[in-house]
Image (tube, rainbow over all chains, first blue to last red; front, side):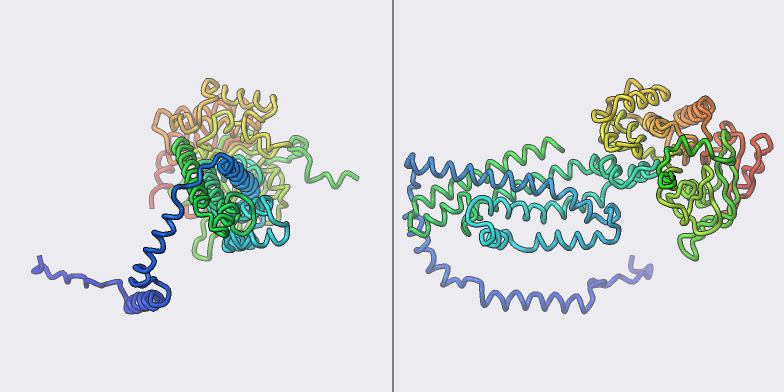
Length: 266
Length: 267
Protein backbone atom coordinates (compact mmCIF):
# COMPACT_ATOMS: atom_id res chain seq x y z
CA UNK A 1 0.00 0.00 0.00
CA UNK A 2 2.81 2.39 0.94
CA UNK A 3 4.26 1.89 -2.53
CA UNK A 4 1.38 3.87 -4.01
CA UNK A 5 2.97 6.97 -2.50
CA UNK A 6 0.20 8.29 -0.27
CA UNK A 7 1.78 9.87 2.82
CA UNK A 8 0.22 8.67 6.07
CA UNK A 9 -1.52 11.36 8.11
CA UNK A 10 0.28 12.21 11.35
CA UNK A 11 -0.95 10.47 14.51
CA UNK A 12 -1.63 13.78 16.27
CA UNK A 13 -2.81 15.77 13.26
CA UNK A 14 -5.49 18.25 14.27
CA UNK A 15 -4.21 18.27 17.88
CA UNK A 16 -2.44 21.61 18.05
CA UNK A 17 0.28 22.72 20.44
CA UNK A 18 -2.22 25.13 21.98
CA UNK A 19 -4.67 22.28 22.71
CA UNK A 20 -1.82 20.29 24.29
CA UNK A 21 -0.79 23.26 26.45
CA UNK A 22 -4.40 23.80 27.58
CA UNK A 23 -4.72 20.13 28.51
CA UNK A 24 -1.49 20.23 30.54
CA UNK A 25 -2.64 23.45 32.29
CA UNK A 26 -6.00 21.87 33.17
CA UNK A 27 -4.26 18.80 34.62
CA UNK A 28 -1.97 21.06 36.67
CA UNK A 29 -4.93 23.01 38.10
CA UNK A 30 -6.72 19.78 39.10
CA UNK A 31 -3.56 18.35 40.78
CA UNK A 32 -2.85 21.62 42.62
CA UNK A 33 -6.48 21.80 43.85
CA UNK A 34 -6.42 18.17 44.99
CA UNK A 35 -3.46 18.94 47.22
CA UNK A 36 -5.56 21.52 49.06
CA UNK A 37 -9.09 20.15 49.23
CA UNK A 38 -9.10 16.41 48.46
CA UNK A 39 -9.07 14.04 51.48
CA UNK A 40 -5.73 12.39 52.14
CA UNK A 41 -5.62 8.60 52.73
CA UNK A 42 -4.72 9.32 56.37
CA UNK A 43 -7.77 11.56 56.83
CA UNK A 44 -9.97 8.88 55.25
CA UNK A 45 -8.54 6.21 57.54
CA UNK A 46 -9.11 8.40 60.60
CA UNK A 47 -12.67 9.23 59.51
CA UNK A 48 -13.85 5.63 59.19
CA UNK A 49 -14.14 4.90 62.96
CA UNK A 50 -15.99 8.21 63.45
CA UNK A 51 -18.41 7.34 60.68
CA UNK A 52 -18.91 3.83 62.07
CA UNK A 53 -19.63 5.28 65.52
CA UNK A 54 -22.19 7.72 64.04
CA UNK A 55 -23.92 4.95 62.09
CA UNK A 56 -24.00 2.89 65.29
CA UNK A 57 -25.75 5.71 67.13
CA UNK A 58 -28.23 6.10 64.24
CA UNK A 59 -29.43 2.51 64.46
CA UNK A 60 -32.09 1.39 64.87
CA UNK A 61 -34.14 4.22 63.34
CA UNK A 62 -36.80 5.68 65.59
CA UNK A 63 -40.16 4.04 64.80
CA UNK A 64 -42.29 5.46 67.62
CA UNK A 65 -45.84 6.06 66.24
CA UNK A 66 -45.99 9.67 67.48
CA UNK A 67 -42.66 10.45 65.79
CA UNK A 68 -43.70 8.69 62.57
CA UNK A 69 -46.96 10.67 62.50
CA UNK A 70 -44.99 13.92 62.86
CA UNK A 71 -42.60 12.86 60.10
CA UNK A 72 -45.57 11.90 57.92
CA UNK A 73 -47.03 15.41 58.25
CA UNK A 74 -43.63 16.93 57.41
CA UNK A 75 -43.29 14.70 54.36
CA UNK A 76 -46.73 15.76 53.21
CA UNK A 77 -45.70 19.41 53.63
CA UNK A 78 -42.45 18.75 51.71
CA UNK A 79 -44.40 17.16 48.88
CA UNK A 80 -46.88 20.06 48.85
CA UNK A 81 -44.03 22.59 48.66
CA UNK A 82 -42.51 20.68 45.73
CA UNK A 83 -45.79 20.15 43.89
CA UNK A 84 -47.20 23.67 44.27
CA UNK A 85 -43.82 25.33 43.65
CA UNK A 86 -43.13 23.24 40.55
CA UNK A 87 -46.68 23.72 39.18
CA UNK A 88 -46.55 27.52 39.55
CA UNK A 89 -42.99 27.57 38.19
CA UNK A 90 -43.88 25.47 35.14
CA UNK A 91 -46.92 27.65 34.31
CA UNK A 92 -44.85 30.86 34.66
CA UNK A 93 -42.00 29.33 32.64
CA UNK A 94 -44.11 29.02 29.49
CA UNK A 95 -44.60 32.75 28.76
CA UNK A 96 -41.09 33.52 30.01
CA UNK A 97 -39.61 30.87 27.70
CA UNK A 98 -41.66 32.25 24.78
CA UNK A 99 -40.20 35.70 25.41
CA UNK A 100 -36.69 34.23 25.71
CA UNK A 101 -36.73 31.92 22.66
CA UNK A 102 -34.70 33.26 19.74
CA UNK A 103 -36.69 33.54 16.50
CA UNK A 104 -39.99 32.91 18.31
CA UNK A 105 -40.07 35.68 20.91
CA UNK A 106 -42.45 38.61 20.37
CA UNK A 107 -39.56 40.85 21.52
CA UNK A 108 -37.32 39.95 18.56
CA UNK A 109 -33.69 40.61 19.43
CA UNK A 110 -34.69 41.70 22.94
CA UNK A 111 -35.16 38.01 23.74
CA UNK A 112 -31.58 37.76 25.01
CA UNK A 113 -32.48 40.03 27.94
CA UNK A 114 -35.19 37.59 29.05
CA UNK A 115 -32.73 34.74 28.54
CA UNK A 116 -30.19 36.53 30.73
CA UNK A 117 -32.86 36.94 33.43
CA UNK A 118 -33.62 33.19 33.30
CA UNK A 119 -29.88 32.44 33.52
CA UNK A 120 -29.66 34.65 36.61
CA UNK A 121 -32.51 32.74 38.28
CA UNK A 122 -30.78 29.47 37.45
CA UNK A 123 -27.25 30.35 38.52
CA UNK A 124 -28.17 31.42 42.06
CA UNK A 125 -28.37 28.16 44.12
CA UNK A 126 -31.74 27.20 45.63
CA UNK A 127 -30.42 27.43 49.21
CA UNK A 128 -29.43 31.05 48.57
CA UNK A 129 -32.93 31.80 47.23
CA UNK A 130 -34.35 30.07 50.32
CA UNK A 131 -32.23 32.28 52.62
CA UNK A 132 -33.49 35.36 50.75
CA UNK A 133 -37.14 34.30 51.00
CA UNK A 134 -36.83 33.28 54.66
CA UNK A 135 -35.35 36.73 55.35
CA UNK A 136 -38.09 38.54 53.41
CA UNK A 137 -41.22 36.38 53.98
CA UNK A 138 -40.28 34.61 57.19
CA UNK A 139 -39.68 31.04 58.28
CA UNK A 140 -41.91 28.28 56.91
CA UNK A 141 -43.33 26.52 53.91
CA UNK A 142 -44.24 29.66 51.92
CA UNK A 143 -40.56 30.62 51.66
CA UNK A 144 -39.85 27.08 50.46
CA UNK A 145 -42.60 27.24 47.84
CA UNK A 146 -41.29 30.60 46.56
CA UNK A 147 -37.80 29.10 46.30
CA UNK A 148 -39.08 26.16 44.26
CA UNK A 149 -41.02 28.54 41.97
CA UNK A 150 -37.89 30.59 41.21
CA UNK A 151 -35.73 27.49 40.82
CA UNK A 152 -38.25 25.87 38.46
CA UNK A 153 -38.46 29.02 36.30
CA UNK A 154 -34.67 28.99 36.00
CA UNK A 155 -34.69 25.33 34.97
CA UNK A 156 -37.84 25.10 32.82
CA UNK A 157 -37.42 28.60 31.34
CA UNK A 158 -34.19 27.49 29.72
CA UNK A 159 -35.33 24.07 28.52
CA UNK A 160 -38.72 25.30 27.29
CA UNK A 161 -37.03 28.13 25.36
CA UNK A 162 -34.56 25.72 23.75
CA UNK A 163 -37.40 23.38 22.78
CA UNK A 164 -39.30 26.31 21.22
CA UNK A 165 -36.21 27.33 19.24
CA UNK A 166 -35.80 23.76 17.95
CA UNK A 167 -39.48 23.27 17.04
CA UNK A 168 -40.24 22.32 13.43
CA UNK A 169 -40.10 25.44 11.27
CA UNK A 170 -42.34 24.33 8.39
CA UNK A 171 -45.70 24.34 10.25
CA UNK A 172 -44.79 27.73 11.70
CA UNK A 173 -44.13 29.09 8.23
CA UNK A 174 -47.39 27.57 6.98
CA UNK A 175 -49.39 29.37 9.69
CA UNK A 176 -47.46 32.59 9.14
CA UNK A 177 -48.29 32.36 5.42
CA UNK A 178 -52.02 32.47 6.15
CA UNK A 179 -51.73 35.49 8.44
CA UNK A 180 -51.43 33.91 11.90
CA UNK A 181 -49.81 36.11 14.55
CA UNK A 182 -46.93 35.09 16.84
CA UNK A 183 -49.29 33.97 19.60
CA UNK A 184 -51.30 31.83 17.18
CA UNK A 185 -48.12 30.26 15.82
CA UNK A 186 -47.07 29.47 19.40
CA UNK A 187 -50.29 27.70 20.34
CA UNK A 188 -51.01 26.25 16.90
CA UNK A 189 -47.62 24.95 15.75
CA UNK A 190 -44.92 25.25 18.41
CA UNK A 191 -46.61 23.94 21.56
CA UNK A 192 -48.11 20.79 19.95
CA UNK A 193 -44.74 19.99 18.40
CA UNK A 194 -42.73 20.36 21.60
CA UNK A 195 -45.34 18.93 24.00
CA UNK A 196 -43.39 15.71 24.77
CA UNK A 197 -40.28 17.76 25.49
CA UNK A 198 -42.29 20.15 27.72
CA UNK A 199 -43.78 17.27 29.69
CA UNK A 200 -40.37 15.63 30.01
CA UNK A 201 -38.73 18.82 31.30
CA UNK A 202 -41.69 19.41 33.65
CA UNK A 203 -41.29 15.92 35.15
CA UNK A 204 -37.57 16.53 35.67
CA UNK A 205 -38.46 19.86 37.28
CA UNK A 206 -40.87 18.09 39.63
CA UNK A 207 -38.21 15.53 40.56
CA UNK A 208 -35.71 18.33 41.15
CA UNK A 209 -38.29 20.22 43.22
CA UNK A 210 -38.83 17.22 45.51
CA UNK A 211 -35.07 16.86 46.05
CA UNK A 212 -34.69 20.61 46.67
CA UNK A 213 -37.67 20.87 49.01
CA UNK A 214 -36.11 18.18 51.21
CA UNK A 215 -33.05 20.33 51.98
CA UNK A 216 -34.76 23.73 52.09
CA UNK A 217 -35.79 23.09 55.70
CA UNK A 218 -32.11 23.26 56.67
CA UNK A 219 -32.34 27.04 56.31
CA UNK A 220 -35.85 27.29 57.77
CA UNK A 221 -37.92 27.13 54.60
CA UNK A 222 -40.28 24.38 55.78
CA UNK A 223 -40.56 20.68 55.02
CA UNK A 224 -38.82 17.57 56.33
CA UNK A 225 -35.38 19.24 56.18
CA UNK A 226 -36.32 21.32 59.21
CA UNK A 227 -36.88 18.10 61.26
CA UNK A 228 -33.54 16.74 60.06
CA UNK A 229 -31.71 19.87 61.19
CA UNK A 230 -33.39 19.73 64.61
CA UNK A 231 -32.50 16.02 64.94
CA UNK A 232 -28.80 16.66 64.23
CA UNK A 233 -28.69 19.82 66.36
CA UNK A 234 -30.09 17.86 69.35
CA UNK A 235 -27.91 14.76 68.63
CA UNK A 236 -31.09 12.66 68.09
CA UNK A 237 -29.37 10.40 65.58
CA UNK A 238 -32.07 7.67 65.61
CA UNK A 239 -34.59 10.33 64.61
CA UNK A 240 -32.19 11.56 61.91
CA UNK A 241 -31.79 8.07 60.41
CA UNK A 242 -35.58 7.67 60.21
CA UNK A 243 -35.87 11.05 58.49
CA UNK A 244 -33.10 10.13 56.01
CA UNK A 245 -34.96 6.88 55.23
CA UNK A 246 -38.19 8.83 54.70
CA UNK A 247 -36.41 11.28 52.37
CA UNK A 248 -34.93 8.37 50.42
CA UNK A 249 -38.40 6.86 50.10
CA UNK A 250 -40.14 9.99 48.77
CA UNK A 251 -37.36 10.72 46.28
CA UNK A 252 -37.43 7.09 45.11
CA UNK A 253 -41.22 7.03 44.76
CA UNK A 254 -41.13 10.31 42.84
CA UNK A 255 -38.43 9.03 40.47
CA UNK A 256 -40.33 5.79 39.82
CA UNK A 257 -43.54 7.74 39.08
CA UNK A 258 -41.85 10.25 36.73
CA UNK A 259 -39.93 7.46 34.95
CA UNK A 260 -43.19 5.61 34.32
CA UNK A 261 -44.86 8.79 33.05
CA UNK A 262 -41.90 9.55 30.76
CA UNK A 263 -42.02 6.02 29.35
CA UNK A 264 -45.73 6.45 28.59
CA UNK A 265 -45.10 9.72 26.74
CA UNK A 266 -42.41 8.17 24.54
CA UNK B 1 -64.44 59.70 11.16
CA UNK B 2 -63.99 56.01 10.56
CA UNK B 3 -60.42 56.41 9.32
CA UNK B 4 -59.08 54.67 12.39
CA UNK B 5 -60.84 51.53 11.27
CA UNK B 6 -59.12 51.41 7.89
CA UNK B 7 -56.55 48.84 8.92
CA UNK B 8 -58.92 46.52 10.67
CA UNK B 9 -61.67 46.28 8.07
CA UNK B 10 -62.58 42.67 7.36
CA UNK B 11 -61.11 41.11 4.27
CA UNK B 12 -64.49 40.89 2.51
CA UNK B 13 -65.04 44.64 2.72
CA UNK B 14 -61.60 45.29 1.23
CA UNK B 15 -62.09 42.67 -1.44
CA UNK B 16 -65.07 44.52 -3.00
CA UNK B 17 -62.86 47.50 -3.77
CA UNK B 18 -59.89 45.57 -5.13
CA UNK B 19 -59.04 46.74 -8.63
CA UNK B 20 -57.76 44.23 -11.18
CA UNK B 21 -55.22 42.67 -11.50
CA UNK B 22 -55.01 40.44 -8.45
CA UNK B 23 -51.21 40.37 -8.45
CA UNK B 24 -48.93 42.84 -10.15
CA UNK B 25 -45.15 42.82 -9.93
CA UNK B 26 -42.98 45.37 -11.74
CA UNK B 27 -39.22 45.00 -11.78
CA UNK B 28 -39.41 42.85 -8.65
CA UNK B 29 -36.01 42.07 -7.15
CA UNK B 30 -35.01 39.85 -4.28
CA UNK B 31 -31.42 39.42 -3.13
CA UNK B 32 -30.22 37.73 0.05
CA UNK B 33 -26.81 39.40 -0.38
CA UNK B 34 -24.96 41.25 -3.15
CA UNK B 35 -23.91 37.96 -4.68
CA UNK B 36 -27.09 36.01 -4.00
CA UNK B 37 -29.57 37.73 -6.31
CA UNK B 38 -32.55 35.41 -6.72
CA UNK B 39 -35.07 37.60 -8.54
CA UNK B 40 -33.72 40.21 -10.89
CA UNK B 41 -36.51 42.39 -12.29
CA UNK B 42 -39.55 40.11 -12.52
CA UNK B 43 -42.64 41.51 -14.24
CA UNK B 44 -45.82 39.54 -13.58
CA UNK B 45 -49.52 40.26 -13.84
CA UNK B 46 -52.19 37.80 -12.76
CA UNK B 47 -55.90 38.49 -13.20
CA UNK B 48 -58.62 37.18 -10.87
CA UNK B 49 -59.76 33.66 -11.76
CA UNK B 50 -56.65 32.72 -13.74
CA UNK B 51 -54.77 29.48 -13.19
CA UNK B 52 -51.06 30.11 -13.66
CA UNK B 53 -48.20 27.61 -13.61
CA UNK B 54 -44.78 28.94 -12.64
CA UNK B 55 -41.95 26.79 -13.97
CA UNK B 56 -38.17 26.92 -13.85
CA UNK B 57 -35.18 24.87 -12.87
CA UNK B 58 -33.94 24.55 -9.28
CA UNK B 59 -32.71 27.90 -7.99
CA UNK B 60 -34.57 29.90 -10.63
CA UNK B 61 -36.47 31.77 -7.90
CA UNK B 62 -39.93 30.19 -8.09
CA UNK B 63 -40.39 29.51 -4.37
CA UNK B 64 -38.83 32.83 -3.46
CA UNK B 65 -41.25 34.64 -5.78
CA UNK B 66 -44.25 32.87 -4.19
CA UNK B 67 -43.07 33.80 -0.70
CA UNK B 68 -42.42 37.38 -1.77
CA UNK B 69 -46.00 37.66 -3.04
CA UNK B 70 -47.41 37.40 0.49
CA UNK B 71 -44.53 39.15 2.23
CA UNK B 72 -42.99 36.06 3.81
CA UNK B 73 -39.73 37.15 2.17
CA UNK B 74 -39.34 40.93 1.94
CA UNK B 75 -38.57 42.18 -1.57
CA UNK B 76 -35.43 44.24 -2.10
CA UNK B 77 -36.49 46.17 -5.21
CA UNK B 78 -39.32 46.92 -7.63
CA UNK B 79 -43.04 47.19 -6.96
CA UNK B 80 -45.44 44.50 -5.87
CA UNK B 81 -49.15 44.67 -5.18
CA UNK B 82 -51.46 41.86 -4.19
CA UNK B 83 -55.26 42.43 -3.99
CA UNK B 84 -54.48 46.05 -4.86
CA UNK B 85 -52.40 46.58 -1.73
CA UNK B 86 -48.64 46.98 -1.56
CA UNK B 87 -46.63 44.02 -0.36
CA UNK B 88 -43.13 44.95 0.60
CA UNK B 89 -41.10 46.91 3.08
CA UNK B 90 -43.48 49.87 2.80
CA UNK B 91 -46.57 47.76 3.61
CA UNK B 92 -47.94 47.99 7.13
CA UNK B 93 -48.29 44.86 9.26
CA UNK B 94 -52.07 45.11 8.90
CA UNK B 95 -51.77 45.26 5.09
CA UNK B 96 -49.48 42.23 5.05
CA UNK B 97 -51.82 40.26 7.31
CA UNK B 98 -54.83 41.27 5.16
CA UNK B 99 -53.05 39.96 2.06
CA UNK B 100 -52.16 36.70 3.76
CA UNK B 101 -55.66 36.24 5.11
CA UNK B 102 -57.09 36.30 1.58
CA UNK B 103 -54.54 33.76 0.42
CA UNK B 104 -54.26 30.02 0.84
CA UNK B 105 -50.71 28.68 0.71
CA UNK B 106 -49.84 25.03 0.16
CA UNK B 107 -46.23 24.03 0.66
CA UNK B 108 -44.29 21.20 -0.94
CA UNK B 109 -43.94 19.39 2.39
CA UNK B 110 -47.55 20.07 3.48
CA UNK B 111 -46.26 21.50 6.82
CA UNK B 112 -48.96 20.03 9.04
CA UNK B 113 -48.69 19.92 12.81
CA UNK B 114 -47.97 16.19 13.10
CA UNK B 115 -49.31 15.59 16.59
CA UNK B 116 -52.66 17.27 16.02
CA UNK B 117 -55.77 15.74 14.50
CA UNK B 118 -56.62 16.28 10.85
CA UNK B 119 -59.59 18.42 11.91
CA UNK B 120 -57.46 20.62 14.20
CA UNK B 121 -54.96 21.12 11.38
CA UNK B 122 -57.71 22.30 9.05
CA UNK B 123 -59.15 24.61 11.72
CA UNK B 124 -55.64 26.10 12.05
CA UNK B 125 -56.38 27.65 8.67
CA UNK B 126 -58.70 30.05 10.52
CA UNK B 127 -55.94 31.53 12.69
CA UNK B 128 -55.98 35.27 12.26
CA UNK B 129 -59.78 35.57 12.45
CA UNK B 130 -61.36 37.16 15.53
CA UNK B 131 -60.97 34.95 18.60
CA UNK B 132 -58.44 32.84 16.75
CA UNK B 133 -56.94 31.36 19.92
CA UNK B 134 -59.91 28.99 19.66
CA UNK B 135 -58.38 27.54 16.49
CA UNK B 136 -55.70 25.94 18.69
CA UNK B 137 -57.69 22.74 18.90
CA UNK B 138 -60.92 21.54 17.30
CA UNK B 139 -62.49 20.97 20.74
CA UNK B 140 -62.28 24.70 21.51
CA UNK B 141 -63.33 25.95 18.07
CA UNK B 142 -66.78 27.52 17.52
CA UNK B 143 -69.40 25.31 15.89
CA UNK B 144 -69.28 27.38 12.70
CA UNK B 145 -65.53 26.84 12.30
CA UNK B 146 -65.86 23.11 12.88
CA UNK B 147 -68.56 23.03 10.20
CA UNK B 148 -66.40 24.95 7.73
CA UNK B 149 -63.44 22.66 8.43
CA UNK B 150 -65.56 19.56 7.87
CA UNK B 151 -66.82 21.06 4.60
CA UNK B 152 -63.24 21.65 3.47
CA UNK B 153 -62.29 18.10 4.44
CA UNK B 154 -65.30 16.80 2.56
CA UNK B 155 -64.16 18.73 -0.51
CA UNK B 156 -60.85 16.85 -0.45
CA UNK B 157 -62.58 13.52 0.38
CA UNK B 158 -61.07 13.19 3.84
CA UNK B 159 -64.10 13.88 6.08
CA UNK B 160 -63.89 10.31 7.42
CA UNK B 161 -60.30 10.89 8.59
CA UNK B 162 -61.08 14.04 10.61
CA UNK B 163 -60.17 12.62 14.01
CA UNK B 164 -56.97 10.80 13.00
CA UNK B 165 -53.58 12.22 13.90
CA UNK B 166 -52.09 14.05 10.92
CA UNK B 167 -48.90 11.96 10.85
CA UNK B 168 -50.85 8.71 10.47
CA UNK B 169 -51.98 9.67 6.95
CA UNK B 170 -50.11 8.93 3.73
CA UNK B 171 -48.15 11.69 1.96
CA UNK B 172 -50.93 12.24 -0.59
CA UNK B 173 -53.60 12.43 2.13
CA UNK B 174 -51.49 14.87 4.16
CA UNK B 175 -51.16 17.08 1.10
CA UNK B 176 -54.96 17.00 0.71
CA UNK B 177 -55.29 18.07 4.36
CA UNK B 178 -52.96 20.96 3.57
CA UNK B 179 -55.23 21.88 0.65
CA UNK B 180 -58.27 21.76 2.98
CA UNK B 181 -56.43 24.01 5.47
CA UNK B 182 -55.72 26.47 2.68
CA UNK B 183 -59.35 26.39 1.48
CA UNK B 184 -61.14 26.61 4.83
CA UNK B 185 -60.81 30.38 4.88
CA UNK B 186 -62.32 30.53 1.38
CA UNK B 187 -59.32 32.38 -0.06
CA UNK B 188 -59.39 34.43 -3.24
CA UNK B 189 -55.91 33.30 -4.20
CA UNK B 190 -54.41 29.86 -3.78
CA UNK B 191 -50.63 29.58 -4.00
CA UNK B 192 -49.03 26.14 -4.14
CA UNK B 193 -45.29 25.56 -4.07
CA UNK B 194 -44.59 22.31 -5.92
CA UNK B 195 -47.58 20.61 -4.29
CA UNK B 196 -47.00 17.30 -6.06
CA UNK B 197 -43.20 17.13 -5.76
CA UNK B 198 -43.09 14.81 -2.75
CA UNK B 199 -45.87 12.52 -4.00
CA UNK B 200 -45.95 9.48 -6.25
CA UNK B 201 -47.23 10.13 -9.82
CA UNK B 202 -50.82 9.02 -9.13
CA UNK B 203 -51.16 10.95 -5.84
CA UNK B 204 -49.51 13.96 -7.50
CA UNK B 205 -51.99 13.88 -10.38
CA UNK B 206 -54.91 13.52 -7.94
CA UNK B 207 -53.76 16.53 -5.91
CA UNK B 208 -53.31 18.64 -9.03
CA UNK B 209 -56.76 17.67 -10.32
CA UNK B 210 -58.20 18.55 -6.93
CA UNK B 211 -56.57 21.99 -7.07
CA UNK B 212 -57.81 22.61 -10.57
CA UNK B 213 -61.39 21.49 -9.84
CA UNK B 214 -61.75 23.33 -6.53
CA UNK B 215 -60.31 26.55 -7.95
CA UNK B 216 -62.70 26.40 -10.91
CA UNK B 217 -65.71 25.59 -8.71
CA UNK B 218 -65.01 28.28 -6.11
CA UNK B 219 -63.62 30.91 -8.51
CA UNK B 220 -60.22 30.94 -6.82
CA UNK B 221 -57.16 32.28 -8.59
CA UNK B 222 -54.47 29.58 -8.68
CA UNK B 223 -50.72 30.08 -8.89
CA UNK B 224 -48.54 27.00 -8.57
CA UNK B 225 -45.00 25.95 -9.28
CA UNK B 226 -44.04 22.64 -10.82
CA UNK B 227 -41.08 20.78 -12.26
CA UNK B 228 -43.44 18.41 -14.02
CA UNK B 229 -44.07 19.61 -17.56
CA UNK B 230 -47.35 17.64 -17.78
CA UNK B 231 -48.64 19.30 -14.58
CA UNK B 232 -47.53 22.70 -15.83
CA UNK B 233 -49.58 22.46 -18.99
CA UNK B 234 -52.55 20.29 -17.92
CA UNK B 235 -53.96 22.36 -15.07
CA UNK B 236 -53.10 25.96 -15.96
CA UNK B 237 -54.41 28.58 -18.38
CA UNK B 238 -51.02 30.24 -18.59
CA UNK B 239 -47.38 29.27 -18.05
CA UNK B 240 -44.79 31.68 -16.70
CA UNK B 241 -41.19 30.47 -16.95
CA UNK B 242 -38.43 31.82 -14.75
CA UNK B 243 -34.79 31.57 -15.74
CA UNK B 244 -31.88 33.27 -14.00
CA UNK B 245 -34.25 35.25 -11.79
CA UNK B 246 -36.15 36.78 -14.72
CA UNK B 247 -39.30 35.92 -16.65
CA UNK B 248 -38.11 33.81 -19.60
CA UNK B 249 -41.54 33.60 -21.18
CA UNK B 250 -45.16 34.20 -20.17
CA UNK B 251 -47.77 32.79 -22.54
CA UNK B 252 -51.06 30.84 -22.66
CA UNK B 253 -50.74 27.08 -22.37
CA UNK B 254 -51.89 26.62 -25.96
CA UNK B 255 -48.86 28.53 -27.18
CA UNK B 256 -46.29 26.65 -25.09
CA UNK B 257 -44.36 24.08 -27.08
CA UNK B 258 -42.28 21.18 -25.82
CA UNK B 259 -39.20 23.02 -27.11
CA UNK B 260 -40.14 26.05 -24.97
CA UNK B 261 -40.32 23.87 -21.87
CA UNK B 262 -37.01 22.15 -22.61
CA UNK B 263 -35.41 25.53 -23.16
CA UNK B 264 -36.39 26.58 -19.62
CA UNK B 265 -34.70 23.61 -18.00
CA UNK B 266 -31.64 23.47 -20.29
CA UNK B 267 -28.50 25.36 -19.35
